[in-house]
Image 1 (cartoon, one colour):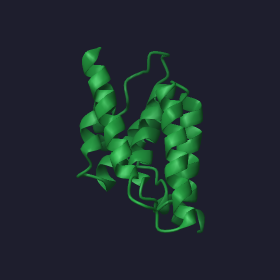
Image 2 (cartoon, rainbow, N blue to C red; image 1 turned 45 degrees about the vertical axis):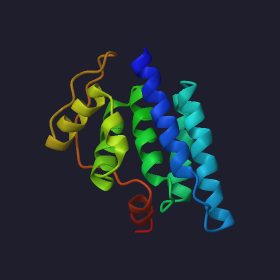
Image 3 (cartoon, helix red, strand yellow; image 1 turned 120 degrees about the horizontal axis):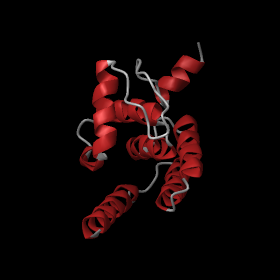
Length: 151
């Protein structure tokens, strides 16, 4: 449990440190506020609320300074909600879009294994609920999703 606590403290410190730069404009200040609210919901295990808020943040601010963290926690939130395929898709996108992020070391082992299967295009093993999920191409999030919505 102390390793879980120290991991949480590390991640919280990392989050706070990355949110310290002053936003460029008033609109830019809303993204970190949305992120903090969504992250707080995740910490309270309110995964549905966290996912909804992270999705709003990424849609409204696709080039936000907190995009990497929002994508990471959105993937974890989907996974925790039981949406393993969506969690694997989003985490694969996070790892592809932000290969240098220190958050990559905080991916749950089970989710990491699902990401590997997803990238290979292999079916995911049945979830504890028995629901079988199959992999496919990565779903765009944020800037890529906004661009595809305009078509």
